[in-house]
Image 1 (cartoon, rainbow, N blue to C red):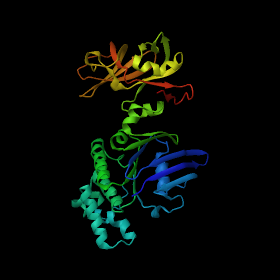
Image 2: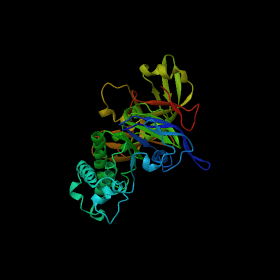
Image 3: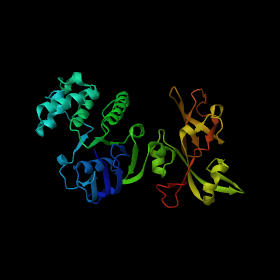
Image 4: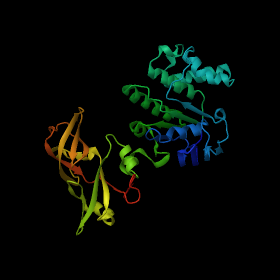
Length: 371
């Protein structure tokens, strides 16, 4: 077993910078998820670790060994790809055993490893079948089993659930989490799906344009995003953002948006007093916007008015798309007993215990959160 370290890793394709000074230390037995939009560098980071791409600068370490110049087959890693890449003419057993046969592993040992991996994944009854006789989920388990039999130091997963339907994705990500708990091995998992990241990871590395934006636990990323990009990427539906400025009035501090004047609770006002008179971005998550009839008790609330644009009934909740000002649509996640109508002007309540302020003065494209 081993941890993994990216030590000031750069990867360039000509003039394009795919990885920009990447620094991550992944602990032994950790489940780290690399997440971000397409083109953010997450798959490139995984391929550099696997040896499928050469590092332009910096070092990649598995345990204490620098592996920049080590051949992929000698890195003691196993990789599961988005495509199952199974041999169609081979049985499930032979697909899982193929890599071990190439390494001249004794037959008895191959049989033991394949049967143990199949039992772990619940596919022992499929060992004599061929890929065409399997469902998509079963094929993905075979691909994972092929990695397990290697007994590597590190497992790499490159968007392995992308080809599965929604229900099967939920089921399979739970199985991968259980597998990590059983194997107690380092898992590094790439996805663009922040729900997968939040539900599976020990820690999440959020990336954008080759730059690591924040590395933290799922709950801390949700509660304390480092900047506007992380705040908008983590959470579904995404956090709402409003251009605003802060105004001081005596000992009170207010957020002024296009249509609203919102008092910041005294318990949090001191943090933002230095920004009084400044342009900021006010952020609040859909789940912190409530129908006043069903607002949680004991919160610092602020009532604001908006017009209902679209409603989405989800069964256990309603998503309201509300118009604020001239061109800002924001989302509220409200109680399913809500009976607001389209084009109706309504009051909603903001939970002012959970808002966020971002300061664009240093970086207007990706303002940092103010703490």
